Length: 280
Image 1: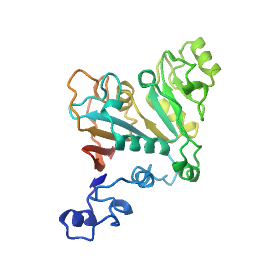
Image 2: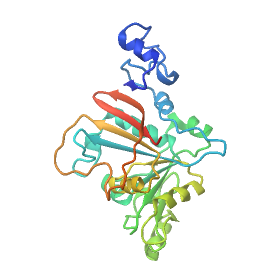
Image 3: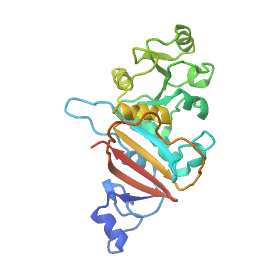
Image 4: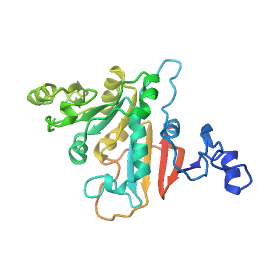
């Protein structure tokens, strides 16, 4: 893996061959070798590269980032799943982003299609999470209007951290009861049947979850974009072409005025591009 952006004097010198580049060179952000030298980064280096913003004077505010993957021709899935268009480095970043988060927000359809399981504790990130005041693993928060979920799955019956179910006030009482009976914590984040994205972010922050990560799917991400609550997008561009009619990373109604994000960083590994954009 190598960093392509931002470019510093160090990385520019390494690119031209005029610097003291090499495996021990210090690249962008003070990360050893994290310039144009192509090598495998440690999990600690990835964690530093993807760290959440530091708290402001008033304390930590919720920060919602999305992590998605897309092919060169815009497909977010192949045969309904994202795994076929992913790769080894993408999965390392996927695991790192999870390890940095308080909670992972995911749509019900993605839970069903991707076979979601509880987040697991990882020894490599144990000290980092402890220092950040976090538990051993992030909670999973499932966004669902109908609560049409299989509550006998391990995601609900045996998570390390209780799974959250985000739904609306008009959700069917029997389905809410089934979720709670399975051990999930139901969080009302909307006045009707569905979930209001801004209210969901506030509700999670009220529970102490301020480092937020969503893994989609496209319908949920589209709702978050439309509600203007997304702070950051980590998008992996996969060097694949699929054609077909697969979904894009975000679906649903278009926003009235496109919102421009700023490029924060760009990494590359084996032809995969790992982009990180954030709101200005």
